[in-house]
Length: 385
Image (cartoon, rainbow, N blue to C red):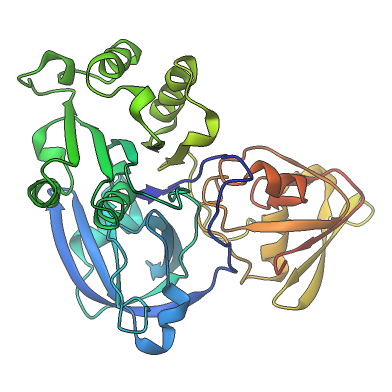
């Protein structure tokens, strides 16, 4: 899934088990394979060398950011990992796989379809994200995933993991596309169904192709979703929900499920686009003599840097940080992925959007610097906490 290019993630109850957040770092990995999935999507697999294996240990449902230079410009895009972790004897991962679907006019996604080859080297960020199961015990548990288009990507990894780790777990997938030709991982899903015929249930909803069952033919709107929850997927029988797709679909599913009495802490969600143009580098900001500024101090990798930000520029904390620390972490810059997370040590900010931080993180002073704007004369943020 292309996050922001993709998203992320669910506000779940703070008492629920969460994967540890680690400082995002880039390392150069080699492309092992590029496999076509549809006419406009490919699966890209990277080799993880033994010396970097611990940096890429990950949980199903997490994502990585990719960084490269195209046409002389640095490009970053984030994509969910689409394979359950494969490990060496010592428990470290041997490879990572992501799925890249071409976006209209997308610089990186177009290059991935037409120019990316095995042997190429790309900077890959260490895995991030909390879009992963909070169930400590999967025995007799029923997990449901709802995806649209490339939103299937993290659910592939989650489904494989849920089904393989318990002989009594169940996974149901509701997957919506325009037509059969648009279904990513079609053969992989069929193979997974053959492997777990009684514990995996697949419901393909096609908006522009007639299915045998009328309920699975047409756009997945509120009326159709409610019908599915009355006849095919009974919410009372589900232990955990994973929603992945565009904001409109995710919001619709959350609203309907809430209306049916499903507790918020059972629902996790991830977005694959916010509609915003991904940030490539800090936008230029000029500090004019005499104008009012905010002093922003940034700590990253143990080093503190200070930058003056004009009040009238309304720039984000991330943009200001990038002007003095080009290595400041970010991926989507849309409030979705959480890569730019930092803690406010002194001062205050307002956040425009937040799809990534859990409520307990916000209460402890963490913010998304890409969406944060200073509201104090001095601001100190720490990326290392």
